[in-house]
Length: 114
Image (cartoon, rainbow, N blue to C red; front, side, top):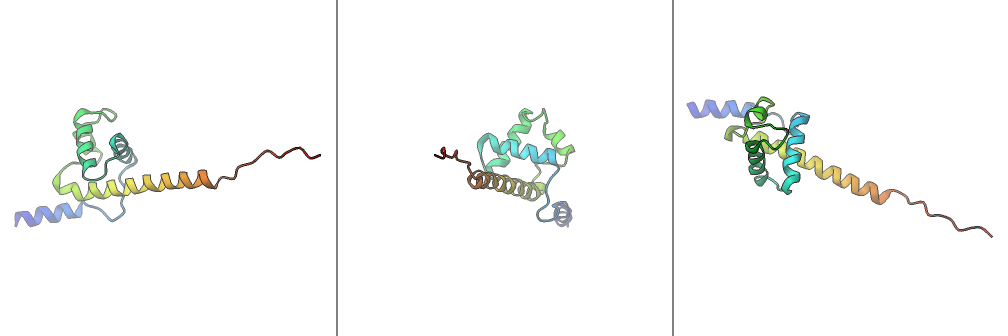
């Protein structure tokens, strides 16, 4: 009985599909990803380490928890979903930037007309 109530409570906090965290947490996830380019689950390890060392804006586990990001096993599905959504946004932005740079017309200097 206890397990069922814990699991159902955790499931209710996972949020809806495609839900993004607050902008400051998006920045934290991006920061951790940029350090090593890791994807899930290595990104989880990096986020834990960054929080333990207070390397992002001096935030530790408690300060991240106050903003809604915890490293609890019950919250892991939500955190993994956030990481996937944030990293998908990073990939989309990189792709958009690459397309923008290749589709920008170049203006070539025209030769003198005789």
